[in-house]
Amino acid sequence: MAFNENSRVKLPALLHLSRLGYRYTSEKELGSKSILDLDTNINKHIFYSKIKEFNPQIKPLEIDHYFAKIKIALDNDDLGREFYHMLSATSGIKLIDFEKIDQNDFFCTTELTCKNGEDEFRPDITLFVNGLPLAIIEVKKPNNKDGVLKERDRINIRFKNKKFRRFLNQSQILLFSNNMEYDNESIVPIQGAFYCTNAKTEAIFNCFREKTSKNEEGKPNFYKDFSYLTVLVLS
Image (cartoon, rainbow, N blue to C red; front, side, top):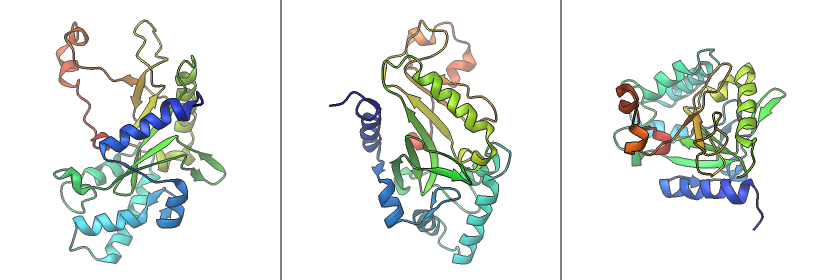
């Protein structure tokens, strides 16, 4: 098997996602079997289906109006705050069932183009919850010394491009991995799995750590309180 990003990182990531409950859908299948809103990459077929399921009293015209409202919110220069409030609302129109996780629809795809005018980028993996693209995963080949750093530089360029705002405002988490063990000796992280959230200029990478006495040693209490990352897209 070839030693490249697909064989060493992307495929293992997709296999792990399948174990978590995500089904893989190719970009070709998205185009032929679903209705993909190219302005936002929201899968309208699944989105409309789940919003009807979660909100049985809602009328078709109300769904159309709410979808239009989401699209307007995604262009806001607010790092996705308004969209997040819509996503996490416990009253009004429900987009995600946080009480019964299995009632939600989870799927992932690869190399999905995010395009606005002439500007575009293609995340390695995109994760969808109820038709909404809520997470991006970028993978790099192992033992590529500058791979993660170059990926961070690329995401910083995207952060500054307002044409990408509508896509990044949906992303609740952005993940980066070269499928290697963490190098605790490096000041600047260059191997392992890292995550960040949306920003306007610069990605601040955080790393995943197992809760062990060694990792907890010397950390202030507030660090320990937030040592668990619970994100719906990784449920």
